[in-house]
Amino acid sequence: MSDFLIVGGGVIGMMTALQLADAGQTVSIVERGVCGQEASWAGGGIVSPLYPWRHGPAISTLSRWSEGAYPTLALRLLEETGIDPEYRQKGLLYLSVEDDEAALNWSREFGKPLERVSRAFVADKEPQAAATERALWMPTLGSVRNPRLGQALRARLEAMKGVTLYEHQQVGGLVVEHGRVTGIETREGHRRAQRVVLCAGAWTAALLAPLGIELPVRPVKGQMIAYRAPKGLVERVVLKDGRYIIPRNDGLLLVGSTLEEAGFDKSTDEAARASLVRSAEEIVPALAHYPVAHHWAGLRPGSPNGLPFIGAVPGVASLYINAGHHRNGLVLAPASTHLLADTLLDRAPLIDPTPFAPTEERLAL
Image (cartoon, rainbow, N blue to C red; front, side, top):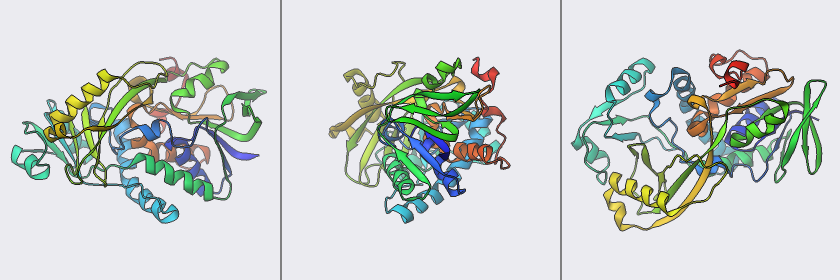
């Protein structure tokens, strides 16, 4: 029997397992597909909320801690697995920001470098970006190649003693005995653990529903496209009107993303593709000369105000949750998993856990 059983093998589930295994705990992960292949694979990999000043201070606190952790994590995984998560810290250009004064106030409060810049500055940093007024520059912004981050996390966990991955195993439900969760049911049988942690993203609410717990986490579809462009056409993350372009080391340019209330439908459609193409060409007009190479969709775990649920589930012993990160799962993963590990291992928390606790009051929203 493991010390911990984690339901969900995305970045949140795998980083939770890594934190616990590093602390000497035995951990099992049960994943309905392949670890790292759902929302963790489908996102863009910007290591910051898109417009961080539009979130509350709790999100800013988590994201600031996570951003500082990513360079070390990426280097660790590369050394231990040989898989490069491609952490890039080349900054972010915000084009056409209307609430720039609020952004600058936020940057001063949280000590985050952010400044207004001129058209000439934008042209110097990204010659292919569209000319714009009211631009902002965040020099410390980083991004990570999330599919490779998932591959590296999975490889590291596979190599660790005390960690077991169970993939392609659908969870039939939680097993509750005398008010305490003792494990889960799968087609392969009952898997037991001292404590169970739900990190199943958009699917988490369905696991809690049979217990009479209505978790306000829902799937929010996001469609993205990618161009295979010459290496160096775009070097930095560029954001305009809620849409962004993210460069990879090999020249791939990701463009995202839509926000759609479509249940668990992950299909793509031409209307979204056309909208993303228009956004891409508005940000970098030269992309009109290149074809779209890829088009895909993923399901984010939407939650009220985008604030994740992290901690013990009320009224059910030995059950914990880390879900509901909405658009910021990868952004917040290092901090949110560290915070949950602090709770699970009775350590002093790195930040105040109160805003994220799945209290009855929050669950009633």
